[in-house]
Image (cartoon, rainbow, N blue to C red; front, side, top):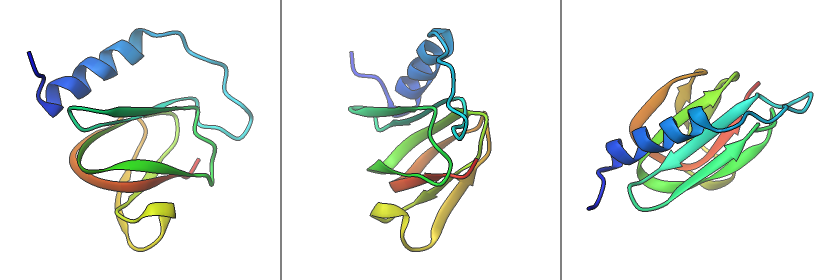
Length: 104
């Protein structure tokens, strides 16, 4: 059975919520950012503020399960216009993410 992107993101977020929490570094937002497109997913534990992370492309679900805000970019290397800003604890669906920047 194939999961829809929304269902897959919900399952991934649920699993992450139940997983062990790692101790954050001093300059990292504790938690995890999850990128999901229904086939692949990436997760970034305790993303460091000011660091740019690669995305997965178009039509993604993005879950910001950290204590900090992230900014999404359509372009790689966090270049170009900011596509969206996601505060802590929020989920967005249908995003185009070439990269994201952890702000805090």
